[in-house]
Length: 220
Image (cartoon, rainbow, N blue to C red; front, side, top):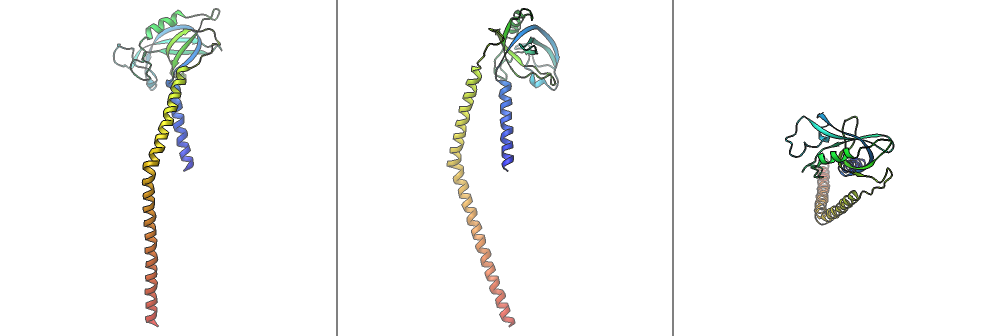
């Protein structure tokens, strides 16, 4: 039972970590090489794409999606999608994907004269599932080695940790004041019932023994 409990705890912890890693903002220092719009046919990976641009209509199985193509300082490529989140999830309330596409186009550069930028995004890049992180904002960087402190993530994770501690404390108090007394009474009642059953069996055996002794006396 102990292994089952810790396996369940591990699965819950991994699920929470993956959820937070996907939705919390991340920062990449990259060089923008190009921006473009592609026609995308959505399939099994549609949950990893945002809704259509705000005010553009209802979701469809195929639509145009804006992309920002970049190169990291180590030379590896990285591609971001640029979609509005609107009032949906995650709550970035992003309505300016067209403005962001224009800013990204203005910051394009070549390897000979690189212009490093900081792209804030959420989500994952997975070639196998063909999913892309969604760019939220872009700004010029001081250089490829600029140090970025994720203050938003620090604040959110701190608040979540405080909330988790408060909920745990509330649960322990609730269990101590409400559940433990009830379970204690149930346990005592169960023990009393067991004691009464044992006493009844003992008396039954005693009476049966006396009855058999009486029968033997009659035979004598």
